[in-house]
Length: 234
Length: 172
Image 1: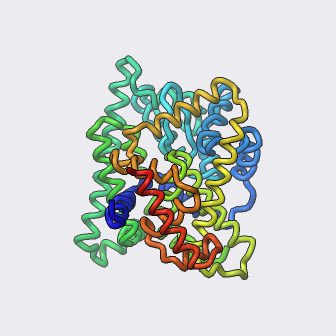
Image 2: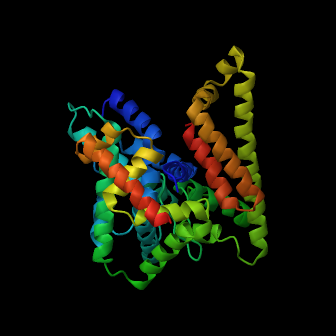
Image 3: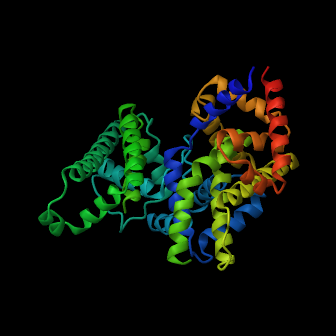
């Protein structure tokens, strides 16, 4: 084998890239940590690493911590929101029997949609929606009629969000008029972020992932992807 | 953290995250561990900037890869010490999560040939493997590699030549 053959083989490894969702989430966490003083995340990190001797990845360790809290007493949606702000966007819900990493935002949204589909009411502020509820929400293979209702609500929500993102891309291409900008300054600001080439590329990739996940029936992944686009342009 | 540093660090992240992740993955062969290591590299860079406000890093790429190398060494050191005993449920949760992410179809390695090269690299002497990866995959010039490993450029050239020889032997 010549040196050139060897080098060509090595260069095929250049095609390895990280998961796009992880890149966005890690970037958000990295940006969030800038200038942060010791908060719940720092305390949790120290506490968790002392228990697990840093041989376990932090997301996995937090999964265990969240499940432990569920077993002892449950967490309110407000607590999830607080944790998101202090720990970072990738709070992991290790929900049995399926294990996945989704953002706390997606988890809270799933609980809300479960209530819409199943309970026909949304009272997230008055009612404590615990992590246990979202355990049931994310286990989509429950054998019940309610599962189908929930899936329909979820699918509609995802399709609506995808349509909104595509709409924003289309607006960018067509160019917003001065009148439109003045009527919707906030949307213009969000579109301005999309106009940044790197962000637009990332958003486009996430959109493709969301559409593929939706087609494959992976509804939770699809929701997580569209939420990641929203976070990118916030 | 000043605005300038904040913008600069974001640019550094965007520019180097793929490279650092790829290097970590090729060394540890675990998507989860590679993601953790890559995240931690940038967190430590941020902490360094926080603690040393007046110090400028002359070569940020060298800094990042040096940090990544050290973290990978720590990872293997801790792995060889064995895990802290966990209760059954925690261990099961973590094992399930790891196995889901690292299964062969997870996309970590695109094809068998690439996995074969990765295996050949893993059998090499650590520094030789690093130098070969940095030069041929990440296209780092010799003087930058010399900066990372704190050796003269001539030594790096010799190590690169030996590294290729070793890789060829492992692949055949």
